[in-house]
Length: 156
Image 1 (cartoon, rainbow, N blue to C red):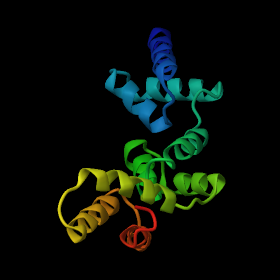
Image 2 (cartoon, one colour):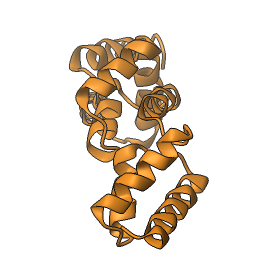
Image 3 (cartoon, rainbow, N blue to C red):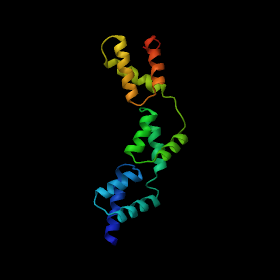
Image 4 (tube, one colour):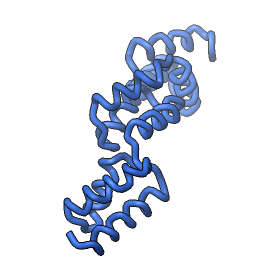
């Protein structure tokens, strides 16, 4: 690899990280799409990692802290592994570092929001709300517990 290609790849990597934080897999993919060969991509990734500009563990921790306010644990794991390119092991480590959290307050908030948009009898609204929440990745027992609270009028 010539010096010019290496410098262009490094500059591109820095430019990509200026706009937003990315995982190593995302950065690698972007550089490859930009037409850089495997060696130039590897060099650029090592270069930015050496300066601490890319850190998958930090990225995962930050992503979890932000997203746990709006997404299920299962959805966060799916996003980090399938969309962000992290390994299951890296994601599990990040989840253990950020600690567990109770998803029921989030389920309750999303259920109330969904119920405002639904029409029909109570059972139909309950069924549609449960289906929506489970598609979002929430565990069925947690969804049912929250919906029971709503059905008995404790939160409605």
